[in-house]
Length: 83
Image 1 (spheres, rainbow, N blue to C red):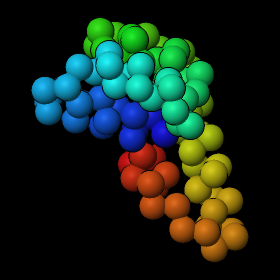
Image 2 (image 1 turned 90 degrees about the vertical axis):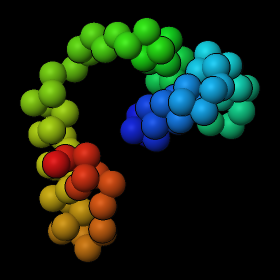
Image 3 (image 1 turned 180 degrees about the horizontal axis):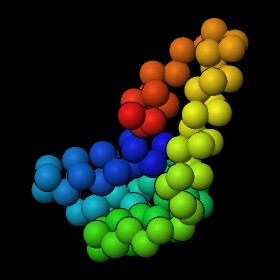
């Protein structure tokens, strides 16, 4: 979710669109969520304060990938993020 969000903000900016306007539009639709409201404004300022240790994020990703493997569920996006 955050990967698609970051790519969308970058695409908006490089396409000449105002990323703040994109945040406003996203907030009005079905994709609106608390994470975008929380992280969006700081991302526009290129500020990325740590909120959760990376080692714990990667541990959770590995556990999810292992569960996917056990249940024969391909998870290519999760695997790419884990790399």
